[in-house]
Image (tube, rainbow, N blue to C red; front, side):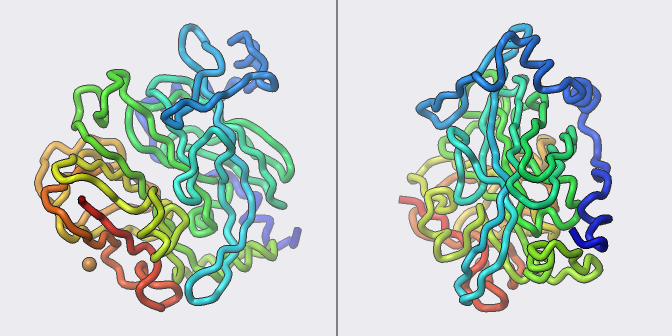
Length: 345
Ligand SMILES: [Cu+2]
């Protein structure tokens, strides 16, 4: 590894704002995976995970009555072709079955309050430090090694799993997995007693300066003082693929209450604009919004989530896109990028 990349790649994990449960998280994260496995009376290597009809995970064991879930992700490099005929290297978490993949973005779906072990199989030539934004930071996972991020699933909501080890370059590089925790009520509501919905979508945004990714692919340090993103993806996809993929085509029936969980892994703050409908913000970064009111543009800060609900009160096809022109282009060519479609039938 070149010497000049040492600071960037081997740097200490960044500090994150606290969650109320952070103290508990860290206590739990302090246990090794094998210690936790021993206490729970099962072996991680023989623990079986089976797919559920809903695509969720099944518990692999229990600890003091609390269900334990295992989700497996692999960190790998890929080369993505864009409609401007360029190919850009990305460094992403890939979902390993039965973890679902929304486009290229893994989605872990478990009940709130459960114990989650996320296994990271690092196939990259450089270490990663997986983390939950605002929550625990996992171990350093060396190249070609596996290790676990262990956490207590926070209250029902939408959370971001990133790579604290690469600091500001992590999102642009492509890292990101969404953690959705479900309310104990078992109902289609954001949290127990919270806003209800009929259909649900998860849209995860990334912005990328391809010069950064090309530098990282050569194991060199990007010019961190200059960030001019020119590629933009939602669930790892770009328009027109976004208009066809079931994860990014917001398809519903007239009268449905449609929940969209926005997750922004990029460095830019996005302002996501609706055509055809107004949406209510239900929670910003899992903090319930007290003052509801119809909005056609929803700010989603970097490394945060925002849960919005709109009523599909008219039929038709309408664009849904960040209100930032470069974000609907591929290196300046329009219309690509994070342009997506809402269709109500
Ligand atoms: Cu528009």
